Length: 291
Image 1: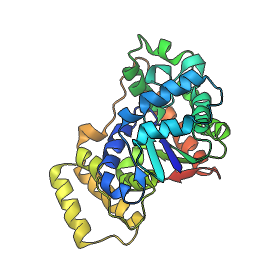
Image 2 (image 1 turned 30 degrees about the vertical axis):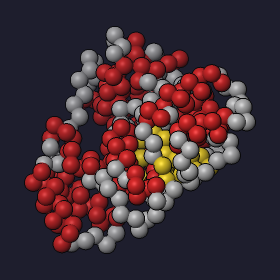
Image 3 (image 1 turned 45 degrees about the vertical axis):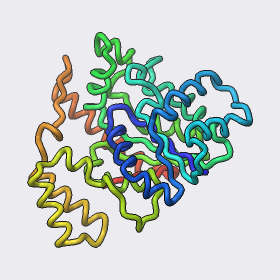
Image 4 (image 1 turned 90 degrees about the vertical axis):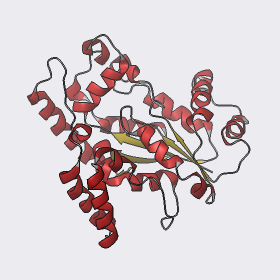
């Protein structure tokens, strides 16, 4: 079986992506793909890993988990998604390390299904907006307390990716940037589900519907129908052009409002993020989905 873990990150479009995947239940099921609701497995997996505390699971653990998650239905590919799979927002900097729990969690997730092919999927986000969003979600009393001594300028997703690879070296790893999701949403649905490339999917425009004006969406769909793109790259260029004209400002503009966070710091964080993403794109053992 193929086990797909969509592990976040926190404060990306994880839950919306899960809802888009769920729209295709019947289509996916016909190809042996299952995307069960989070209530079937999130608490179950969390408590199983906590109880094991790094130990190897018993030989029958895999089958017990699959029976509980699938309700005795068969599957060739199982998609499990949770933005908090690594940790909740207030633990991202626990121990003074960016996602310090990732090594333990990823290795533990891998051990739950030792006989199966495992994939991890992860969305990145510019620390200039990721840290304020995660801090707001954490309800921590102050940014200083939340960061636990970590310098925002030192945050590197590439370090986390390297640690994930080390924790589960035989697992696949797919990465993308949350900033690119309006352009690659349909591909994300296909990548996570592993659906046949010729299969028609639902939900490919869910994110665009949320960030583009109704008039813009209508015009986009009419244009795509009358001028069918020949390649995925062409389609993304068309989407980008319509977004540039019809995006809803309050849905796409991310204002950073933290004490002490100057425009210069935001620019520096953004520049470092762009270099970091470039380094990840060049990693040989990572599948990177770009626009």
